[in-house]
Image (cartoon, rainbow, N blue to C red):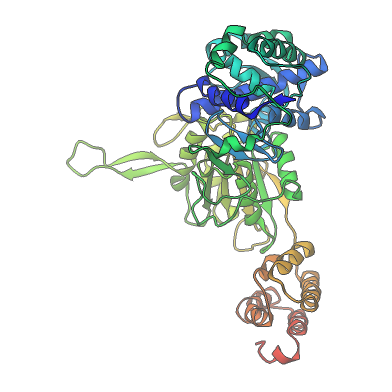
Amino acid sequence: MYFSFDLVELAFRNLVKLDSSEGKARQEKVSGLRYFLAINKLMKKYTTDSIDLTVESPHRQEFIDTVGEIVALNDQGLYTIDFNSDFKTNINYGVSSNFLTTRLANSRSSDIGYPGRPKPLLLLSKEHVNLSEDYDEALKNSFGIPQIKASLAIWLLRNEKIDVQITKSNQIHEFLKNKLLKIYTKEVALIITPTLAEIDHLLKGFKAKFLSNSKPELSNLANGSNATIQDTQNLNAKPNELPTIYSLENNLEDNDSIYLIVNKLLSRGAKGILFSGPPGTSKTWYALKIALKIVEGDSKRFERVQFHPSFSYEDFIEGLVSTGSIGSDTPLFSAKQKIFLNFCDKARDDSDSSYIFVIDEFSRGDPSKIFGELLTYIESDYRDVLFKLPYSEKDVSIPPNVIIFATMNPYDKSVADLDSAMERRFEVIELNPSVPLLKNLLSDTGIPKEILGKIIQFFNTANNLSPHGFGHTYFKNIRNIDDLVILWNHKLKFIFKKMFHFKEDAYLLIRSSFINIVGTEAADDIT
């Protein structure tokens, strides 16, 4: 037997009393509460006062699964983010992209109380998690636990099997008390266990059955008229839907090899990641896809710019803008904060979430000049350290939850190499031409297998001859021979002529290999 859907629904609807406000304040309380309860469950399970969540720890994934036990509505990753009307779908429940890669990673260098608001319940130190000293007062006075104890207890035990008969409120009370003491430490269990009077108050007017033969289908809780489901595997129809300029869906697989590398780097405290490789190797695609996955499709936590020779510190950090006229009391020019510092302000107000700033064509500008004094403060050890801006003379800092992704073609001779100081601020992921990715691109377009084999043969020839590599994405959206002819005549021909300007034999060999793809019938169309 299990608690019935009607009883669990009643409990869930009453959890809104945790915080009567809309939006961020309640979400922050739920976020802090879910991590606190998950950590305490593990403490009880392993009889310890501290949980090791370092990268190598076996408890890391167990922690994520335990968070799911607190907030999940089903086994497919649907979970509540506010104990009210906002839901998301993510098999990691947002833990990997927020808590683990921001607050926990930052605890390597200094102790952190979590959450920052309304009051800390946990103490993070060197990626180990303890309960804060005054967590009991915080639960009672800042998290509204006294108002929701009966609802919370039923919700937490919604998937627990019940082997006793329950037909009266005092039997519910006895079951909740005994079960919570088995799952949580004694001190925490006593705080969240409701009194009989509190249970009676919740059940006032309740006429349905307390129990059912099967687990309640809780996905139905997300189908209410006020419910908002954010499927982080699909960006269609989101409240924070990304502008069409980004044109990518948040559907990168959890086991993608590049994503796993990025996640590992972030978990180890990285604050900047550079995707490096020759043209056409999915650098920008990966930077955007992984950024979208980390921010769970939330456009407010994502920004993108492209560096170029005219891009400057005054465009990126702060600059002087015209604000007055000659003869007026208003200064002719005033300092104005620009895109990166504006992004940092947003991130600072949401310190428990990761914010990703993507810089495309990183080395096409002058990164050291563009970042200026921020070159020091984007480093992980100098986050949250105040420094003075030159124009406004304002004291600012870079929050720890801002992560920078950048893309760069290191073989482009038209741009300068990065200086060592800038390089030191970034972990580098090298993306090379990939036959498997080429196969995936062409398989998706339904190109015939015999043509696919010839394209792969050409691709290997081009990369054997190319000094720095020839990317797979040049063949994106290629469906037939006509597309291949257009690709050569209007793009590849010029790339390879430039690449082999002084090696005509190599150019002719590549051209011959391409003609082999299109066959004799289309050979005359190749210019």
